[in-house]
Image (cartoon, rainbow, N blue to C red):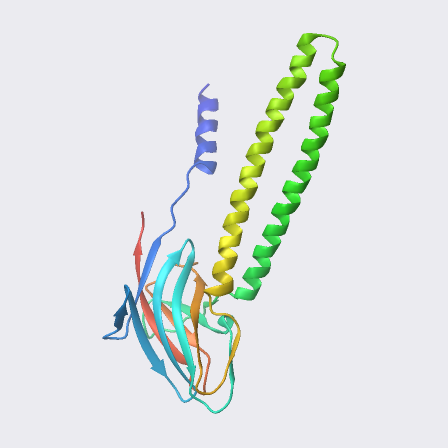
Length: 238
C-alpha cells in the first residue's frame, strides 16, 4: 500500500505540478521617455534610420514591442523583424553571446496555416468516422433481435452524438483561436517591408521570452553603426 501511495505521489509531481511562467514588464533605460497609453516610448537614430520603440505587453511567452522605423538615407532599406535581435544581459552595457531574434511573422503565419489545416483534416476524419458509426448503429437497431439489443445501439448512438458535438465545438473553438492569431500576425505585427527614403513603417515585433535576465538589449542592424536600446526587465513570479 505504501509503495502504491508513493507511486501516485510521484506521478502527481511529474504530471500535475505546473509552474506558472514569470510575468515580465520592461522599461527603457533611456531617461525621460515619452509616455502614451501606458507605454514608455524612446527614440534613437543614426545616419540611415530613426526609430521609436516601446515595450507593449507580454503575450504568454512572447514579449511585444511597438516600433516605428523611418528611413533617413537616400536608398531604400528592407526592414524585416527577424533581422532585429535581443541580447539578454546582467547589465545595460554588458554584451553576451546569447542572441534571440524577433519572431518571423511570415514563418509564424505558415505555422498557423498548418495548424488550421490539421484541425480541418481532424474534423473531416471525425465526421467520416461518425457517419460510419451512425450507419452501423442504425443497421444494428433495425436488425436487433431483442429490445435490449436495440436499446444498446440507441445508447451507442447517443454517446456518439455527444462525442460529435464535443468534437465540433472543440474544432470551432480551435479554429476561432487560430484565426484570431492570424489576424494579429497579418495586420498588427510588423512584416517585411521595403522602406523608401523619407518613409516610415510601423508595427509590433515579438521576442520569445526564454531566459530571465536583468536587461534586454535590442539591436537594430541598420546603418554603419547599428542602434542598441536597452530595457530593464521587471519580473514577477505568480
